[in-house]
Image 1 (cartoon, helix red, strand yellow):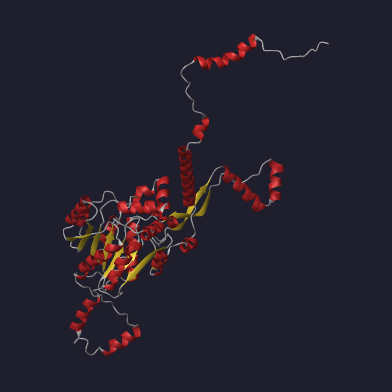
Image 2 (tube, helix red, strand yellow):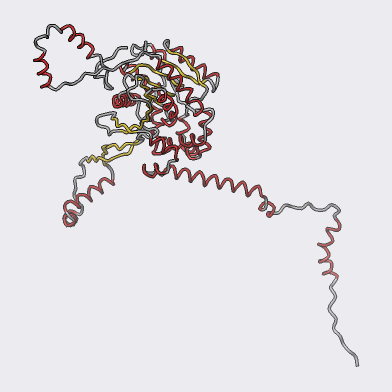
Amino acid sequence: MAIITEEPDSPSPLKQRKTLKPTSKPSQSTAPEPIKPTKTTNATNPFHFWFYFTISVSLVTLIFMILTSLYTQDPKTWFLSLPLNLRQHYAKGRNIKVQTAPNQPQIEVFAIQEGPSKSSDQVLIVHGLGCSSFAFQKVVNFLGVRGVHAVAIDLPGSGFSDKTMVVEEEHVDDGVLRRLKDMYNEIQEKGIFWGFDQLVEQGYVNYEENKIRVSKRNVVKAVDLGPEEIGKVLGQVIDTMGLSPVDLVLHDSALGLTANWVSENRGLLRSVVVLDSAPTGTALPLWVLEMPVLRDAVLGLGFAFRRLLGTCCSRSVGNLEAEGHRILLKGRDGRRAVVGMGKSLNCSFDLNEWAALDGVKGLPMQVIWSDALSKEWTEEGRQVADAIPQAKFISHSGGRWPQEHNSEEIAESIYQFVSSLPKNVKQTEETVPEHVQTMSDEAKSGDHHHHHGHDSHGHEHAHAGYMDAYGLGQEWAM
């Protein structure tokens, strides 16, 4: 009996050739093929991860700073968020109400003061743009200890003074929205049934289309005053605080802002001190505060603002001090006010012509200048002193903004100068009631001629007062 078994078919020679062809090629080539980089190699590269991560974080931070800069805090919230040093500075001051024009709202000006108010030396410190009385705290304290009545103010738009004001403006309504609004007001006034009657009878609502409508609305504007308005502010502050005749200290850009007022109000001044005050320009570069992205980065990041101060304003500035300046400049729309005031500076101001004016010639002056920044800046200070013939030149070791370590040095220079000036004693006229004056005249009628010479002499001294802040009083003589 035969047994039949099935065996698997052996591969055909053709199939073997086909399967062996691909495997035979690598054996024929002697050089190995280069390994091509795969896509997974790029995906796992750590450099790409950190690059995109840094870019993403930077964009998110920038967007966050821009959004926060658009949001303005209300004054109460802003004040409650202040650090301790700014709260203490605010607690030492007072607000003075001034008005730059009859049709403008009043503005509150912040001021700090030290020393006896009846002192013969009355010093008023006016800071430059971007700065505030916060930088002059220790200068004011040192002067007060020496018996000087020292006052430092925040110009409107700076520090704790008002930085915005509500102004009523007239607006002419025009366009499609105005017509729709007029139609709505007409229907609201005459009733909805009147509107239906107009639609049924005429097919449209008849209203006074050609009537020009002028509406008034309140607009919040930055307090960006010009030199003329700043002069009015100074006059009212001097009058309110009784500082005349005053020793005026002009810091940084304050010389350009108040030069015209100084030449026109000699009667209110006893002397002028120029403290690192160039005829044009400011220590803090205002163009940085104008560029949209750069200004948000500088005012939004504390280290960036501190770096800016250290480069342009002070040789060395502490973290708390720089943070205080940054908060005061950024808060309550202070940046916009400072930039607006900077645009009103007189770029063509000629110091030599100003020093030759009748209201400036003979006015005692002192130039206090930093000699620690650069040779160019020290040379500019000497040129300022040379342009004012009667000015004395004194140098100090700080920057263009007062610093904690040299505040006493600056205060001592101011004190030595103002204490060397002739003293002025104010004499005021006493107001006597009419009935008392009548009784006194009757009692003295018998010996009137005997005392005529003395009365005449006393009458001359009674009018030796001082001009008030508006130039309506009597002049004074040194």
